Amino acid sequence: MSRSVLVTGVAGPFASLVARRLADLGEAAGIGKVVGIDTVLPSGDTGRLKFVRADIRTPVVGKVIAVEDIDTVVHLDVNPPPRGRTGGAKELNVIGTMQLLAACQRSATVKKFVLGSSSAVYGASPRDPAMFTESSLARGGVRSGFPKDIVEVESYVRGFARRRPEVIITILRAAQLLDTRVTTPMGTYFTSPVLPAAMGFDPRLQFTSLEDAVEILRLSILKDRPGTFNIAGDGVVLLSQAARRLGRPIIPLPPLGFATAARRVLRAAGSDISPDLHRLLTYGRVMDTAALRDIFGYELRNSSQETFEEFRRSVRPGIMAVVGGRS
Image (tube, rainbow, N blue to C red):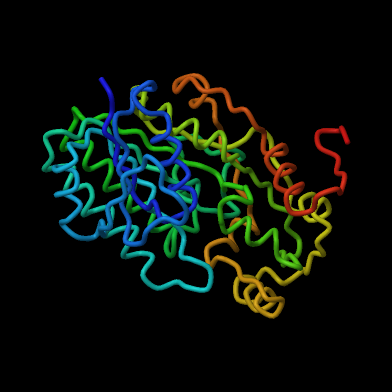
């Protein structure tokens, strides 16, 4: 049976890329139709993607699901605030998700719901475990901003799962995407002229490659993979290693007040930093991805080191770097 897929947030570069690739797969891959929804038209040619201009915070999304006979919903419209802006993000993330789930609750056709979540659900604090598993709870850093949003979003999705147990729910908690084709908080930070860092800390960072993220979403749609799964390339990259390979100078700042000081430094340099990134840049975060391999059935193609190196080559072509002991 071919799928009728709704993808939210398709004006964003990542959701747009996912939706277009799914649409291009077509009937041969079991996808009959892909409908993209957002308040703004995606840039470029939409190809086989059917775009509907609508706001998921309104009841219109329910009409779209009904008219298009949607059976699979892929919710990718949960994001940190855009660069230089903080207002409105919570309303879109939380209220938008609530309205979308209400529409799915009323629908008789929706059989699968895939949430593009984030590793930010674990927060970042000095009390964190060496590795977070899917059953781990946040120990700090989720009381405000995007981490708080994503915790609330996941709680609403779990509530929906209890009300509609027949619907297959897949939650994908991805580490920071790092690719020059999509704009992410970490990518913006790494392309800044200077890199503010908290004195006395060298956080462990993980990254998700664009190819892995898209393929896991594709499999979540075409296969039945209920559950919650961490997504991050194997291994870690230390912030000091990343700065050295990028050739960016680190500006050490006191940990107390780091968020405010880092933003001032980057704005003076013509860049910016996500208001929620400062804790990750202080304490780091590492996830266990065994469930993705053993239960979901996907072997990650790119390690965190390889994903970072591909990003580095894109922003600094021609500069050699050592990855995993090899040049």
